[in-house]
Image (cartoon, rainbow, N blue to C red):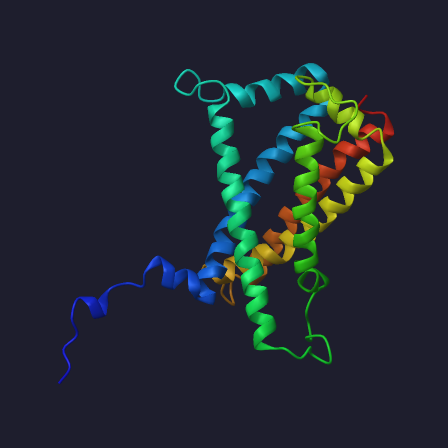
Length: 234
């Protein structure tokens, strides 16, 4: 008779969990939800642009003074930035590795598309690439000003208006935001299934919640460039 020892009952190591498809999907789900929470807060803050430069610039300044006096100037903001970078990297790496694993498992493409698959599902990979490139452009445009010829340090309202006064800035932003909406539409439901929240009874509620979050974020983010283009924000 074989007796189970303590080592036989040990939980899998982090390395073993990460190497499994379930582990990678869990990392994708958790990091994705962290990013959605950030995006909701970010979208809400962006809408302050409709209340004028005073309100918007004050909000941008507050982001750097969060946590004072316990935290020094910009420390809390940098903590958020580090968390978001880790979430993006974890999400991207796990998605890429799962994609490569899926390709190796099925080297021959399906002759027909999977029945019932949505447009969002079929474009998840391309949507992820578009979003990754947009994040880089967005940071270079409105954070560092590297690709923004009219960038004014310390004047976020003016920088936003300047960016969306150029047609290419509007196109890049709106295309990326639409890709984000599609990504969240499918990703929210997928994350719920991965984390064990999904069930036959809750399936409709989860899909509806994901759709609502995707639509609200898309409308909130698109509202800013549309506001500048229409002259409401100037």
